[in-house]
Image (cartoon, rainbow, N blue to C red; front, side, top):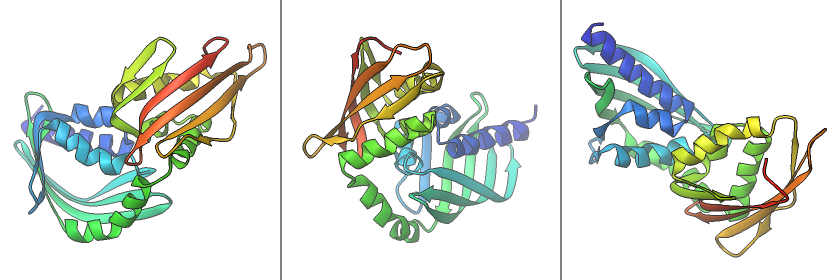
Length: 248
């Protein structure tokens, strides 16, 4: 495979990962030492910093679609003109970008991106909705999460969690967004043949909410549990699952 083919494949893998809203896929597509710069603003350096940057918009998007308007690849470098589209809280936000991607051919990961974009104009449009989401009540955040559980959408289930969140249930402890998303991937299978219902969400002070849930199903033992959520800056930081009468 030529250098150009490897470069094209690595860039397309990153774009597809971003559209999937799965931060695990995004992380795998990024080189550990990536430098991501929205020119002329200062760059984010290192994968952890870039993940923080991307998660801040990806996780609050119900859909992401990056339309490629034109592209060219030479060696380990790709030039991609795009329209980056995000659907947040029922409204589309789009921004035009012209990105210069550099790929580490040994690992087939993107190691550098210089994105030429009117970031000031973009922030002016998207900032109000981002501020509102960051200031949601714990009950509102939990309601959004509960809706994802009812719809059996595993990526949406993980979307409201902070990158360093912790989920505790039974004797298990899941730390970090990726581990929590791995657990939520198993939930549709765990709930196969069962119906889940939720009681009203109860506010527990300024940063916590609790919801009781019930599982039922033909030839299945009914189960009840309660989830207590602690939130910070509009995201779930901690979840404690209390199980009554067994697990599912």
